[in-house]
Length: 461
Image (cartoon, rainbow, N blue to C red; front, side, top):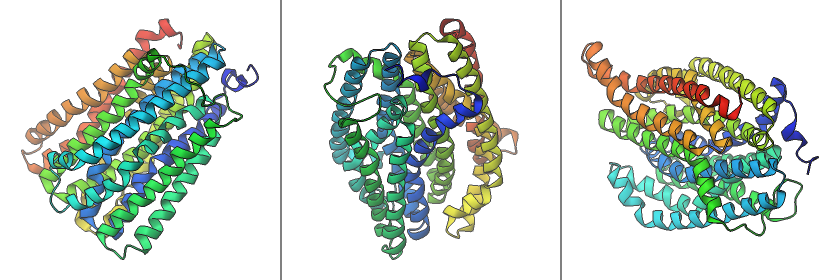
């Protein structure tokens, strides 16, 4: 046991810490690429209405995936702490019980969505032109929802099991399957038929989820060289309550982020129609790349924090916290600069020659990207307290950041822009894009207040 845990207890230089979390970053990034790859192919081979339809249903499925993130991050924090305490048998029983419960939840959600998805879309204001594409895509994806959740679940635990590289292998295999499927089913066989393009994208995504979710399940179900294995569960309701308590912040971050996307989609649909939804879809894809990298970093470093917290290794805790803050800050700055420089080619990839869509997308992307300067720190703050098994603080950060600040700024900032810059429709439109920048600035300030308030309790600084 001591030999197996040597990686988790070692002192990391800045470079070694980056290398350690890199496989998890790539794995989460590739897992988030499903919708982006689908969007590129559908936008170019299916047209604006089909592309807008994918952007409407995407946030709904990400809300469901948030449950997998919650079970994964919350459960891995709990299991990591138990491993740090030296009880491997209890860690495996806990890991198994959480997995079985999540599979059951995924099946139940699939059944419910199968019968309620159309009314949900109607309530969101989906147009008659977009509805057939939304329903066609959904009827293929809904049966694969449990696999979607499992992919995010096992991604968290592969890092805890000291197998982050294996997680990357699984995700690459799933991503390649999705890309090849899109290239064939959408790019070759759809014949520019929007409905066939949407259906092909859904099939390609489902095939990728089959590999990303089911293959890790088989790996953990058999004897393996990791720290964890699926087997006899430790059936205690307190395990699920603790898991959900730990992971509630990540769940709320994902679900509220998806809800905010729904709000933005509905707002742009009302303001300028399908072209607005399509433009925000491209901006949302770029944002999902940043979010995936930040999430991957948090998932990669969290097992180290949880294990050293359980082992009462305060020196390693302080070192990990300091270097994590530095790495996430460097990444935020670099990402902001890179995306600003690439705004035109990124917009062109999704605009399929539509100049109006291209211009709206570029305008939105250059403004929205400024928020990346501030997004990294709140993501890490939430993950830090989850790793420390303090779901309450983590949840507060997530709720205030994604719901209170986001909803407040999306209401207030456009009004301020409207009155301050000429009382024009265009000023209000730009205010919508800028609202997320101000929201993340407030979230960063809040994160540092929590860092300061809890440093004596957890000794990370």
